[in-house]
Image 1 (cartoon, rainbow, N blue to C red):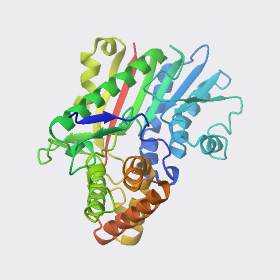
Image 2 (cartoon, rainbow, N blue to C red):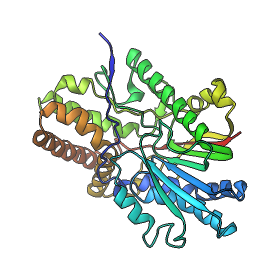
Image 3 (tube, rainbow, N blue to C red):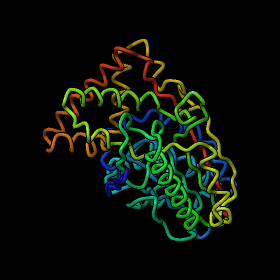
Image 4 (cartoon, rainbow, N blue to C red):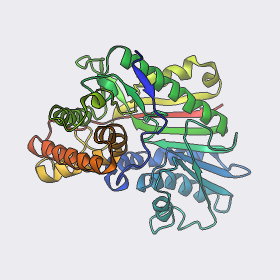
Length: 366
């Protein structure tokens, strides 16, 4: 019997309240402002136009923050030069919210009404811009999501870092394939001399862990597993469905990010590596909400909102709906799940802390 199957729906479609629960993502974007502005300065004037594409933009402030320093840096030197910004993401993204923010009082377009804004709707595992048209590509907190939701026989865990055997090998192969495909698409779209800036969740060596790596958010995913397993043990979730559910993501180590850039001829010929690193996150790297740990009720609400923000679409489509059999039943399961999750974090603050390591990849198109 095969150990895995592939679903066509991408896991990130329909994320819930992502913008208001993305403080961690926003802090990472803010941390890299000067680096992004520096890349723009190195580009100089770009003809026939400066074109920026933010891949996997999402609906909220992080997307604006990723683009704003690039726009400001370019406009400071070339106030009237043609400039285009393209936001790229899945059809289910909240595009109305995104463009309202871009045009709002804190948006990058307020001071530059002549700037052309665009949307590219689709997967960043396919080309989203014309060949050779992109001067700067950014991608924040997105490339760790795989190209498609997967289903593995993996009793006892719902995420990649605790997988073993064939299930881990299958997901590792998919993750490498997707990373290569992502880079190949960007190589096609970037103009010579253009830059690709990727910042996402990563993993670091840790011999105490089952696979020798500590992955970002390990406490968070183990909290999800703890609550889901309790619900399955009580008969609320289908145990067989839970055993086959794994989040469709992979947090690369620095070595995993680098390896195909050096070994795949098409990538080695396309890119010069400027940086590949995995470092602790800039804000509370040992516990995302460490500054609220002395207020357990708030601490628990923040973690529950954060998990719901990135995880609800996967949990609902792959766990709650198959277990319940209908939308109303899935709603009831979701309500119970998040109530239990909040209780877990409130009663044991710090036990399931979300540690953050950020992978940074900066490439220059040859």
